[in-house]
Image (tube, rainbow, N blue to C red; front, top):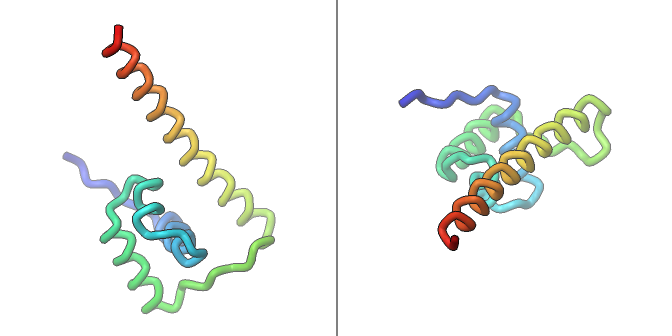
Length: 93
């Protein structure tokens, strides 16, 4: 089984979601990562001083990156729900 790797930007944005008030378990589930992995990233970024929650209304480039990430999560959720619906529809027939 191949090990997944995450770029630093992904890690930072995942931790920012937690810093903005979302629960670690919720963010981890949404991003398909383990909660303990997210906690480790959070500790690491706090130790580096890289965790600064930028106020809403940052630069347009940051907003575009955030929206693209959110879109990817929504697409993954949609695809999962399609597969689940097909599975349960097949089972009830």
